[in-house]
Image (cartoon, each protein chain N blue to C red):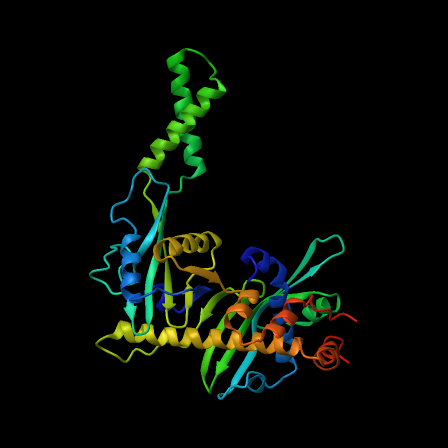
Amino acid sequence: MGFLSTTFSVSRYYIQNTFDSEPMEQVRQGLVKHAIPKLENEYEEISAGWTPYESPYLPDFEKFSFVFGPYFLFSLRIDKKSIPAKLVQKQMAIEIEKKKEKSGRDFISKNEKSEIKEMVMDVLMHKMPSIPNVYDILWNYESADLFLLTTQKAANEFFENIFLKSFNLKPIRIFPYTLVETKSAFSSAQKDRILTLTPLHHVR
Amino acid sequence: MLDIATAYNKYGFLGNDFLTWLWFIIETDQDITRIMASKEPVSLDIGNSLVLENTLGDKSKEKITIKGDQAGLEEGTTALKKGAKVTEMNLLCTLGQEEEYKFTIKGESFNITGLKTPSAGRDGVDDEIEGLILEKAHLLFRITQVIDTLFLAYLYLRTADDWKDNSLRRMRAWIYND
């Protein structure tokens, strides 16, 4: 399990705003509403949603908890169908040959070729199983700190979108500037001074 | 607050400047516990990788990567003399007497990769998973607190009136081996 693994990668967020009331219940509702579907949609290239930390492949928030002491811990699962280019190439060659035989011509037009490609992609997409990727999330609601256990840009973007949609709270990525804005006790004057800094010139 | 994407690009240099300073304070054996005003001892060491980048005149970038457990860092200080900054570094951090962490941090994003915390205890029987999670969460918060405190301490020094005459002067003396 990612979070309890020996080593992991992490990107950090600050959660702007809070719920009006009953945060635990609101989180539960958001998780249930945007849980990853139990059954795979055969035609979707990508599907993403929440799943319990202890049960990444059976997203049942009634059976598995997301509350551990003062933390919310759950996972984002992103299922993606990925069709190898060489497989597309092979199927295309087969289908083009069939088309030529059927039409009695020794060539096919550009339009016919794109139609074949569309058809091949549809068939392969339907047949291909999704590959799941699971990213754990640790959220301390009280301190507004959240850790996403990945630094992959695409996963970060998925997370930011689905988090906002699920909880109507905006996750702000922590990096040098946002750390100053969200976690420092600097006065406005000190912050202004920091924001006028230019890159360090350490060369003589 | 500024637009996030704009702020990321505009102030990414603060993170790289911070890592460069961090290397300086580690190499010159400065008292990190005191810098952090920590109640418990904190020590830092450079781990097995260091990446520096230098923006050249034509805006292209020169990247210097030093890797390996026994790697010498001389190439890094040479790059510093040419104006390079540390953009990524692997660190070993010890909190208290024996709480050891290892991780790589990127200056621009503060992304942490390959984080290895002390192992969470495995004594519990019932509620074992919850105990492990709480302990791991505690360790994760502790190490990120170290990073935050050091970064804010750096900014405090960097915006101090005596930055140029004090910290920067000493940093240059280290870079040029005065």
